[in-house]
Image (tube, rainbow, N blue to C red; front, top):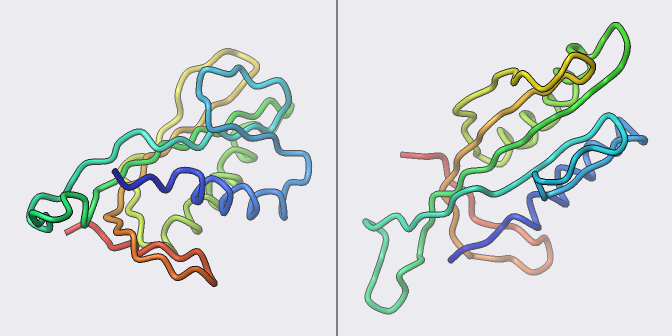
Length: 140
């Protein structure tokens, strides 16, 4: 199994904190946001791309799927704040060859706005230690 959740999480949260110093984050979707804005970044799927498998290594290439949830409760601009935060996430994902497969508001409650996006990419484990680069490829 190729697991890049921690790496992706750290990279995105670093970008978000540069723009929103008060943002809270988690990779655990079961936790209720204690402060806002809040973002949850979770790798939800990792499957072997069978056409790249060999006898020696089943996981030469995996297709991964991430879900990102943004929660906001700002008076008067919850929706625009969530979209601005998600734009940072989408830009990072796109620049790392992820494809956004959905972006939708999810009914959470009257005072909290939730925006959910899902992204996919193909990933291998060619790691360049000096940059922590993972080989990320667009889906094909």
